[in-house]
Length: 612
Image (cartoon, rainbow, N blue to C red; front, side, top):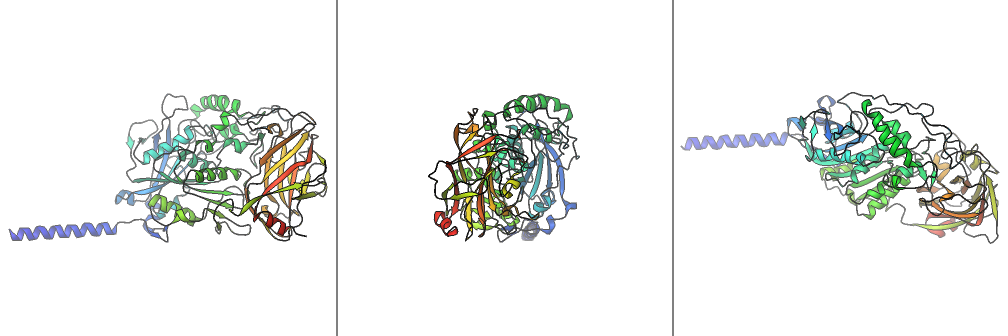
């Protein structure tokens, strides 16, 4: 009996040691200095497990009487299969993965027509030829995150690729689709091996903790998912996201195209991404594009309405809890920097852990990898690395690289104060811009002509097509941080007119290799017909003066000594607005016109920089 007992004890001891050794040898994520490290055992693409599936949503938008299913692809380390390893997920969803419509002539709206009148010709509707074959949706982000101990999940948004449904451009289904994927990753909804079958597949390898990221439209969708309040979405890193379709296609009541895409509107983007099942496209075009988008987007007045409000994620943020690391470029004139700013400030007001990263370049540009790594390491792996106590704002200074931002307590800079400047006569050449308001009843007039670009107007020594007012030459650098605000008292010779405002750094650097920060500080556009509200416009009485106030795009820029800050007012902007026949006159009342600048150090800093 003693021998049997001894043998049993020995067997159990050996088994325990064996199991303990096996457990100790299992591959796990590695963390150092608060960041997930590359693990060699996770880094071989040939060992990654890749498969696809369809997750069922609770919407039906393609008219087939069946709930739409979203096409999903998974890439994970082999240890999630061989060793039972569970890992968090980095999730990227997009309408672009399966290709886009060709950029054919006529896809954009014709912009050469009078304001308030329809375009002279209808636009064309090219079809998308779907690209790609299952199971690969995309390879983006995989080599970045899988070796660091994450599973990467991609999905095609509704009505694109092999996902069912219809693209709605900010409609409810575009938020509920990624929500369903996150619910599936947490075992709350069903996934299937085929788009129409009943064989289920589960995410047994998922910890249920999900982080989302992406750029542009791919950055919009993480925010959309977060506004649903879905459990399991712990953190998002949107990069240059479109957070409001109104702010993307309109500006203070004005029909204003995104930079680089003159004549684009929400229906154009619909055609551009509609890569789903060809059998459903006619239905989707009729129900979504031709019945919902085109009749409600209102290219005649540019007013903000219920349609646009429903596609503004600022209005939907109350349920959001996901930690937010926002990224944008101050000189992104496609998805403009206000898109990130407005969401960041609301997240901050709601008590959501939030940080913002801004660089000085154009569209796109993620935060440095170390920032993203620390963010996901903390919120997805649960590592206490103190990221939530890091600086709130990270700004890339003008001559620095994007991976070397400067930390600030917040954005706008807490030391910035609003300083009001007034214009003085001489705008046809170069009038004054200072803190003294003119006592004379002075009015100056410009003549609209879209044939003169904003850049050309800013460089002109004299011009009848813009009014320019500038500060004295700066004796010291001046730091602007936040939103500039303009109030203009004006009269128009016609019932409708464009109003464009640029804040420029003078003298203009005409060199081809000039940095954008050498010349443009910030910009803004507005419709004088909306001087009371962006929800209500009415024709202007020619010759009657109206006061309109609006913010320019947020910025954080240090204007070097030797430069002047110039306020340029003109009408049609050849890069952004409708282009009516030249000749409309805008008359500016200088006594009723003022520019408010957010200056670090306030009026004292301005006085010091502009002293005689």
